[in-house]
Image (cartoon, rainbow, N blue to C red; front, top):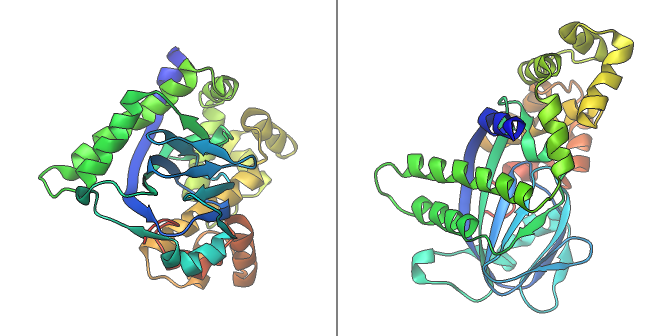
Length: 305
């Protein structure tokens, strides 16, 4: 248990956004993907997810870890199936935001996006390689989701502070839910081991601060003080992925953040995150997220309407 406490204490949690969504027409997003974690609570209607179309019941919470590609269906009835790209181009036909003070609408849900990083470097839930899952019968998680939604929609003093506190608490309760229900405990146990390895922590930190530079295995080996031939094996043994795949994910995550928060050109963003060839950067971006970089810029998230 002490290992889990260390992981939780090392987490940096950042609230991104929240919104209430009304479903106008049922739609399936075949390859939903976001770099941030997404918590969805079904108010009324229907939500299904995954290859088998598992249903979320009204009042239940669906957790979609950041970096996880998943099929999501919103709304009752026969849906239209769209790719991420197609959905973004036409989302106003299928969903719209609404004021929760007007009550709960038929076929509606609320969502929260947040970031949770270990040592401010590693996306915690993405590192576990968790599938999306439903949190059922957990009144505390449900109340925290609603508390974040309520506070985010108000203009009272201290709003940002309260949202942050409740989001922090929500993340802890999601981890507690995983542990108490025996979900993905093996992955958590593995993480508790490698997050204590100082050489790996040094590599994570170096990658974070040098995304635009040389991140070859030779460079990483010098950071960790291991041989170039061994560093890839060492990294994969502890994390389950090879270092270059991890680096690409971190580069693309930073690119998404820059696209959403700055007016820098796609060419400049690509260079800033380590891609000298803009065309190659754009190809890799679309391969990872299912949409072109330019369209990512035109939205804050798939469900922002």
